[in-house]
Length: 103
Image (cartoon, rainbow, N blue to C red; front, side, top):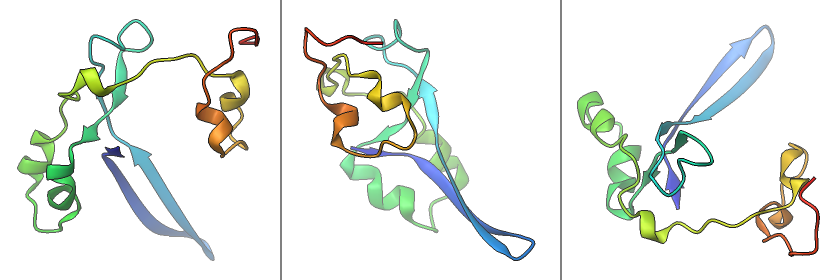
């Protein structure tokens, strides 16, 4: 799954800053009860076009649509382990056992 995003490298005093953001769109109906927004997910057929410096701004904007393959998305509870930005491993997406607490 590839999400649309933008990045930039800029200077602040003597430090080089790399910044990145994930672009969001309206959530698909399956997810709306959890959040009104979701990342723009780009289908494989659009990856090269999204990354190309030759793609026009109008064409890029056209790609910023809600995901058209909602049936491919799986929803399941995960542990609050994911809430800590220091946690960057597979435990963040492991399904929560029914016996575990969510908080």
